[in-house]
Length: 451
Ligand code: PFF
Image 1 (cartoon, rainbow, N blue to C red):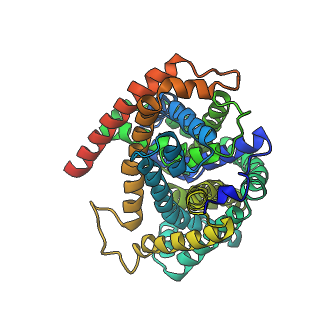
Image 2 (cartoon, helix red, strand yellow):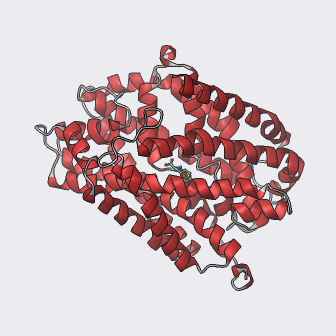
Image 3 (cartoon, rainbow, N blue to C red):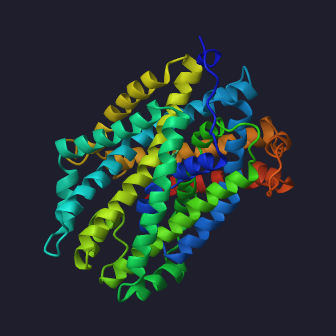
């Protein structure tokens, strides 16, 4: 039995509700943890420029595509492809998306758990005599403590999703997103007013094209998909709770714009502070958990700002995690008739378990290695370097050639907004997006395997 026969589909009650939910999905660890460290290691503004090109020419058209697929079909990713191309294997693209959501959330929650625990570490105080590399390594090589925080984070995520689209997701983002904006603003003002902040700004804003390699392009596209929550049906799912009165071109621009602005602003909160305190921003993934606490330890009221920073990071992660769980839950509710609460609890619990190997990869299973990566990085690599770009590529081909770009354009423009999805869309989705993703994915894979 299909659950849709029993209950009418929920819809966002306001346009702002949808925009905040989709922007909440987009703004996450990708913006505040990953974007600054990738930028820090790949040439500062040089990376930023390539990333912006990827966002505009690939991210925006794919965002329009996913929103329209969702609004048109009013279904989860699997159901969306089934309803537009019945009796064909295209539903497998939706299934890949659901699977990807499952994988990403399992390790995303582990990193979010680190962030939650750092809120409490900040409260007990960051002091200059601490060795933050030791603190971080000590934390992740534990077993019980990281698993505990991973569990806490999953329980928060499950609680919101179990409460529904309007009472759960929309209510959470309407409270959390404004807090996120305020926290980010406070942290930027703090960073920019530190003595020596200018050096960080110049690193961030002056492009170093010498640091750009083929990997940079790969990283920029992978980051564009990850940060915009594209390539795995999250936006199809959120789009499916839009009613046909909602505009697509404008909403997609809002979400892409907010995500991009917040990533760039995160750089303004981080680089000036790192340089002002004489540290370097090229620490890689440890930038957030090792370099920044050291920065906070040195500044006046540093523990307070550290607390605010990890609160910001945790909120950003939570509003993204709910969209990941929603993809999986919407699939089983729509396609297999499960009740939402049961789906959220059972699938959330399974995802929690799948997230345990990434935790253990730093302790019990630290002998594990795949292409030189630990378990968490391996999950992340498959999701980001393969599943998301592949999902984006197949979604673009589907929209451009199977459903047909023209039809999608008409559907997107059914409600007029200030941004019309014009003929440029067909050119992008049929030619530019698939070719760019295919080339960059192949080059990236070649480089990964040849070292
Ligand atoms: N966009 C999120 C971030 O930048 O952290 C991550 C993410 C959320 C990816 C939801 C994919 C997704 F469906």
